[in-house]
Length: 342
Ligand code: TXA
Ligand code: MG
Image (cartoon, rainbow, N blue to C red; front, top):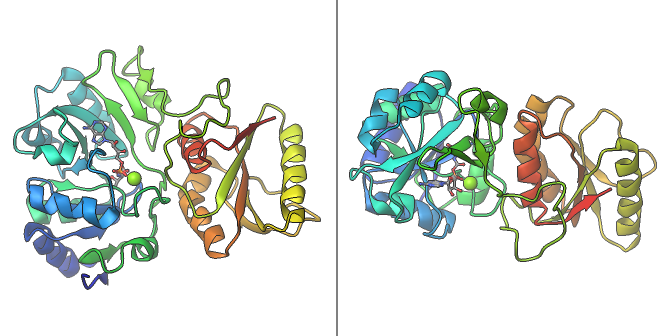
């Protein structure tokens, strides 16, 4: 068991954290998307520690974080011209590019693939840490594997206390959902995960952009146990409601919540509009009303309802535009296929 310290992200503590990284240790740090669990990306031993702390399967590759766009060429090789255009437009920021891996990055980082996922976060603490460490930092989200990602230092502590060396507390992540992952080694390029940079913005650079069928679309959504990868899941079971008519969706959800409560289970509601439910004895967590607030609060709200001990979490979501695509993706995965189309 490690002694996990949690420190405010002051310049002195960032320097100490950078030394821990250089010494092969594990440091959780804030980024604008979610907290990351960092280790020296050039050290296979250090990176192995990440997988162990998170209980993450070795088949799931990790993102490499850099401090300057110039470092792209030190972690990746044969960059296509598009990589430079996208870096100029979206880095620093919530975009991760999958490129050909440089031999400087151990195969373990990429789960033995020939590629590497690279991101340049805009968060000042992340930036300062990577710069001070003097090495690229491999970092998945700082949560236990398959749990909702951590958007605060307290979330990191909840999942990883005793398993990592240090948590730099830089306040709550502002975007709240992970980066958009774009695979530039595919022709045409393909979005592997919708995230903080909207697909619409990338399409302006890549008209024939593809989107990986990572999650069920509205048309094909049907509970398909075993087909869905469990991810971003709270302990409670999540029920996701969607459909073109808000009124219809709300009605169905209300009926289901009543039946759920009547069966002796406790229901929690994630509220995505300003109309609180009336006449229902449920725990609620308000996500806010605009997309930016909703995505910023999403993981915290899932953890909050979990902490209140509900058995089921009910949520309604329809938007797929902008950050809405990322919110939909995370909810589908949290629901593990329990998607109810009304
Ligand atoms: O916003 C984010 O991206 C956060 C912060 C900490 O940067 N990181 C994050 O990492 O979400 P993680 O490990 O939770 O998710 C990264 C995903 C993984 O699911 C993995 O499958 C994919 O990125 N990935 C990493 N390297 C890849 C590669 N070489 N090829 C394809 N996918 C890759
Ligand atoms: Mg993750």
